[in-house]
Image (cartoon, rainbow, N blue to C red; front, top):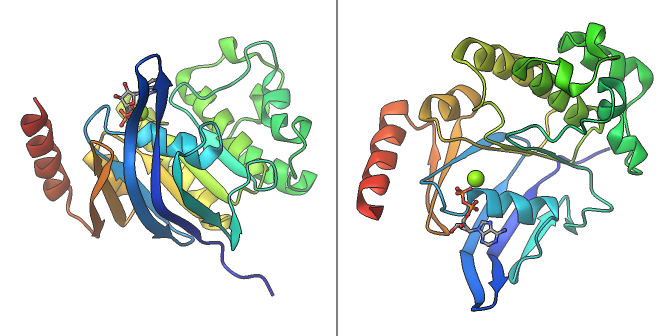
Length: 237
Ligand code: ADP
Ligand code: MG
């Protein structure tokens, strides 16, 4: 019997070291995430990407703990899929090799049958032999999603992953993302600057500003997120 995976973030602090010393960005953030999609919204520079960098192992926290599925987070042992804003595809590799990159990096990947099903769902079969430069933004985004799902991740992190797309393309990519997610539900954090996107993708939203978790909202209305964001942006100026 397998238990649902849970992400537990406790008192997480992190920052960046420079000649002036440590600049703290995240100031003790705590939350728990089940097999659900939760969005993160907040003013620019508030620490959203820094949080995802801690969760993906790019950045070591200065204090606090991160538990994923009963074990302390270990980017080598856990399967963590990060989809950045510019999709993170390797320009010198063809689409197929980009999708299979997790395998080249020693990650577990799904069976060939499931790979094909993911590729079909995302409608990228005709693109497998192309280079990323030969793709549109929406196509690149779908390739990045394929790479994320192919590793059957324990945790999915999307950092403004739909924001470079036009409205209709973003909408299509979000729909495909949700369809795949329903088949492979896992704890998922989606950073977005768009209240509409937060509401479209998730029923829970974390509001992060100046390195603090200000609110953990269940079923927020789009209007509520918009006015909170507006207020924060105005008070920070
Ligand atoms: P957000 O994603 O919410 O816009 P970030 O997490 O990217 O915010 O940034 C939070 C703060 O950390 C900002 O003040 C930013 O300038 C700083 N920061 C981000 N990345 C680095 C870095 N690599 N080195 C130093 N400071 C950084
Ligand atoms: Mg960011």
